Image (cartoon, helix red, strand yellow):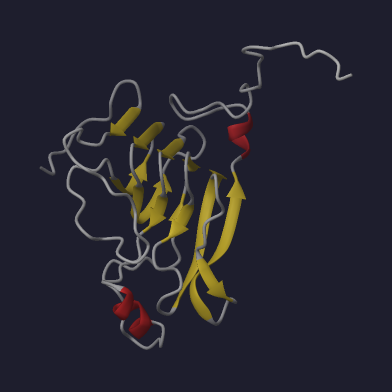
Length: 203
């Protein structure tokens, strides 16, 4: 109900699916169709303390995410499925119209977007919604890290033509020794033997 809440003491926010709902998952053709009860986190704004936001479904970035305390604060975004940069298009017919360019810009479009965070998608990708539609959106700057199961598209063409964004990805060196709250540790994690079995030599 849009009620402001204090940052949690453990530094973790998690958005869970409603067990009574049937979440069909993200559809690239219709990304903003209502999906009631699905664990989607809509994220934007500034932060000055460390925080991790997790979602059982998707994380949708609706505007810039700026670190106001780059010396001390870290943000982690962890989605079971997709981490998506918002770029609204009503349907595929609308997408075809926007591919012609012009001034028909979707509401909520983010030009020269910046995301200061460590991004992790467990099953899918970090992508831009409707990345092949409309005019060039400028540069997508990520200051942090990106880990994804599949490489997701964010744009087409060159700096001056095509659609979507040009990438400017900058690794945050602090992530070598520090992590956001309860984030998967990329340094200390390692393989370990759980079970083993000896195999007789083939004759």
